[in-house]
Image (cartoon, rainbow, N blue to C red; front, side, top):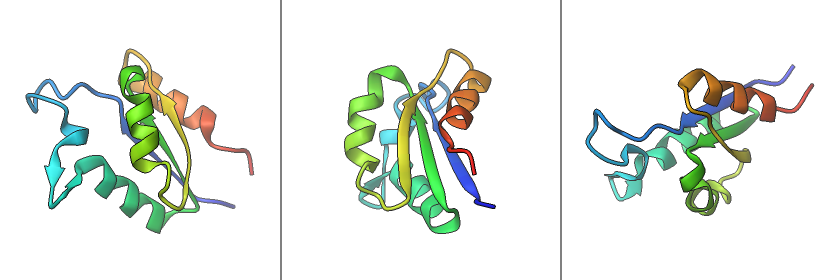
Length: 91
């Protein structure tokens, strides 16, 4: 059995006051820290982002070992989680 991580980063950072996923944290975007940690703790990672951030996210995390796909999320958090689950390959 494989263990997968879905990093849901499709929000708009309204409470944060901006694009939280792209905010700098120690010289790297916040989402890069999340993805690197997830990649080290699981067999594969699916990253879910807002549609308008897809190209930037693919460039940012596409080269991280363990990231299998970057997909777009939905209007709600549950729709985004569902999109991530759909992208996880069957064992």
